[in-house]
Image 1 (cartoon, rainbow, N blue to C red):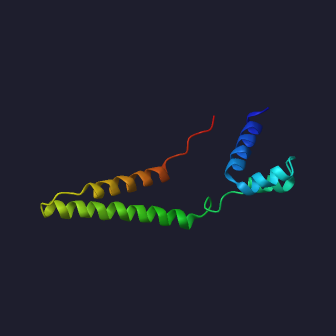
Image 2: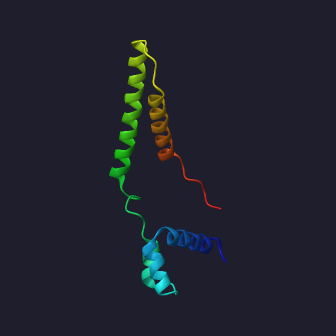
Image 3: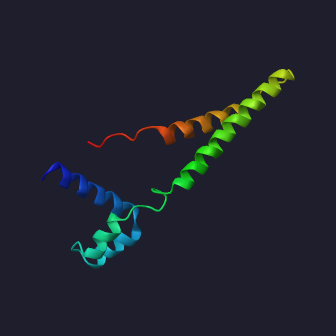
Length: 107
């Protein structure tokens, strides 16, 4: 089996695990029907949605910006910075890093 075929079969198995409609279609007809292959080839709707991606990046960026401003205001007033604010900023930065990170290469 070639590398491309192995990746395609692995991707199909992952899709079957995630998609109950595809799993049911394959259980009804054990052979790989054209309909099942078309269902497996479909990408999730959010993959090509640039507007959603930009909205998520903008929201996480605003959260980081607001928490930094909150840090500065609390520091200027001489008050302690709450742990929740630190956690919120760390989670938002982690989300941004996750969005911009290059996905790992397959085996």
